[in-house]
Length: 352
Image (cartoon, rainbow, N blue to C red; front, side):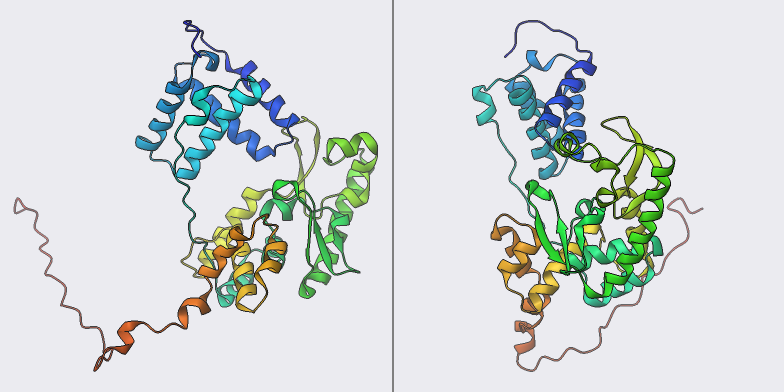
């Protein structure tokens, strides 16, 4: 791969080409941000030399640094590798032997964090009011946070009692239940969104973001009420891709921080994220006797093996199994006896 030159790179043009290819391939904004980050770090790691002058050994050296010096997780390691392979294959248009032979770390799939029903109730009781409905939809319908925040007005079908999730992970659409306790609250949320939509139209604000193909076919769709956000942001911002000044949906980071505060306020010691509510949704359905295939459909998993992880974390699967400690003859769990605390000498080793 090396040409013998040590060309130094001005990364702007390379990253612009990378962004252009990612958007052509219809990858998400989060994927774009991650891939740009890893390519930028790869270039800086090798003294700003152009990636065309680098190859397999340099890629492995960078990945080894991530694993041994920075001690990143295997998922982070794999993401960095995916970004670099994308750069060479899709941006440079090359396929070289080292690209298929380079080592990949073994994927580690952690057990999902699941809240009990009582913990979910406590969490929803203390979360700030402006975030409570989003948290309730995440748990009540099993949505990913990005899927929930990007819901449009037309995606809530009250007559059929469903929510339509469009363009979920893998670009797949699916139907999920519209929980009965949320219907009136969602109608109230729609009324609030309508006020913001009316304000935006009255001042001629640039319409909300819609898929490019839809904008070409229906130029006025982005300004229409059905395509407005179900959870619009309260403020106006610049679109990171188009540069347009318009209303975005609520921000994931804002909700994530609010959820973390609520977890602490509810006295939950588990690490609570938006995905924790999705995990809890699946596990509680499984414990209620819902078929695993149906849960797979609701979660939008392409393979049932991904859904099967919830069979290993349901409480009834473990809590109902007696421990062998309980079956020992003559064993009775008495009060725990601890030794008295050691005397603490306030004096320093030097006697001061």
